[in-house]
Structure formats: structure tokens, C-alpha cells
Image (cartoon, rainbow, N blue to C red; front, side, top):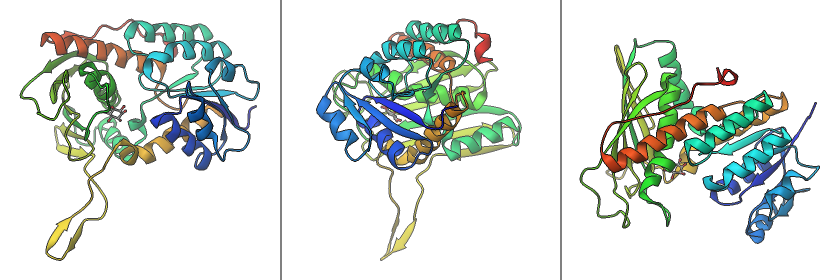
Length: 337
Ligand code: ISE
């Protein structure tokens, strides 16, 4: 049995570089064997100080490297399909950053390829499931501690957006996390999505309508709403309030020292997702490594990647027509039951 994962990290951008540091300094049972980036200089910079790691410009080269026995995909989503299919063919553990692929059709191809393999190899990088507060709320729901869950209210606020962040990306890149969180909390599929566009901020770049109000229903009728607001300026906030029959639970507020001094009071606003979810990423990657060493996966599956891609497709259609759009899903294969 493999004792150490020798991982090829594909993509050395913001998320890839973060994972490389994590693997190199905090994760047990895994090492960075290769870093791939079309920008070879970036790959070289990323392996600095990592003994035994090589920098490459081509994912195929990494996958055929005998020293590599696992892959972490952190490229932009439109590049995932090709790398995923090749990694599935090699039957090695895969951690794929979200989205699995950018649309339901290609995500379904991945689900089919994994089914042919006959066992699960892909874990999708929905890290919030590994955040302590998400896990605590999930437990309250599953154990019916406050009666039935009735409604979920999500706020997803980012300080600003990188260049090229399109209107569709509010759904595909940001709300995708909320789709996954709602599926995780309720244990149900999402049945419909509607998007309402109201008054918009002057701070959004051309082409983006910001904020947007996303209305979601699940199989049992739980109603969820998401305020997606990606040019909120003040800082980073991803919070949820859950309404139960016997109580209300809120998660995701700013934490940390609350100081009163010199006639003033205050604390620090979370600046970005690395700070908000840093600990969750550590737990997520350790869970993947531990499970991979047992020949399993330790988190969200390719089915979760496919189901959220279908939600995003409905969401982008709903952005355009303002209607309530049904989420279309193929039957869930036995492998994921
Ligand atoms: C980004 O890609 C992430 O994954 C962050 O968690 C999310 O808050 C942000 O909106 C996305 O753009």
C-alpha cells in the first residue's frame, strides 16, 4: 500500500500556490512531487525549497512521471475536463478544485468515466464542508436538535472581483459554493433557482450586475436565498442564518479579538477567502490525503460536482430570464448512493 502521496499540483496560481504551501508545511502523508503551470517560471518559483519536486509546463508530462501517484487540479475550471479524464484513466487519487467542470454536460462525462472505473477517485474542492461552523450547523440539522430546518439565508460578500470576472461568474464561481452548502446542509438536491436583479452598486465593473438575489428551493421545500455581492468593498463575508422550528442559528460572522480601548471598540474584518477558510482547506486536504492512502475519497464526490454544475446552469439561465428555472439532473448512479 502507498505510504505517501506524491502529488502533481496542476496550476500554480492563487489557489494552487496556496495548496503547495499547505502540502509542503502542514499536511501529513503527502509531498509535492511536481508543479505544472503553462508559465514555467511560476511553476519553478512554486517549487522553491521543496526537495525532490520538479517544475513542468505540461500536465501530461506530470501524469506520466513515475514519481507521481496523485493529482491536485487547481487550474481554471475550463481546463479541468481533459486533466480529469487522463487522471481517471491512470486510476490515481484526484482532488479537483471547484468547479468540477464549467457545465453539467462535461461534468456528467466525468461522472460516467468514474463509474466505468467502478470506484470513486475524485474529491471536489468544496472546502466549506470542512469548516468547523459549517460542520456544527450540519450536525444541528442532521440531529434535528432544533426541529425541522425551514429556511436558509446566505450572504456571500467579496471585497472586489479580479479582472475578467463576468456576470455569469457571480453564479458559476461564487454562488456555486452556496449551492453545494445548501445541498450539504439539507442532504437534498436543489429543484429550482431564480435570480432577481435589483438596484446595483456603482462599484461593479461594466457588464456585472451586482448584487444579485438568488432564490432556491430543495426537494422537501426548504427555501434558501443568497445575497451574492462581489464588490462589497468592506471585506470578505460568507455567512448563513438557518431558521428552524425551534430556533435560529447563525454562522460566519467575523471572529477574533473584540477590543475596547481609548474610547473606541472594534475588531478586524476578514480580508479574503484564504483567511476565512484557511483552516477548512487544511482539514479538507488532510482528509483527501488520509482517504487516498486508504484507497478512498474523503469529501464531496464527482456527483456533487455534477449536481452543482446543473444548479449553476439553471442559475445562469435564471439570471437572463428572471424566471424560476428547474434544475435538470440525470438519475444518481449507484456509485454515489
Ligand atoms: C472564489 O473563486 C472562491 O472560491 C471564494 O471562496 C468565493 O468566495 C469567491 O466568490 C470566488 O470568486
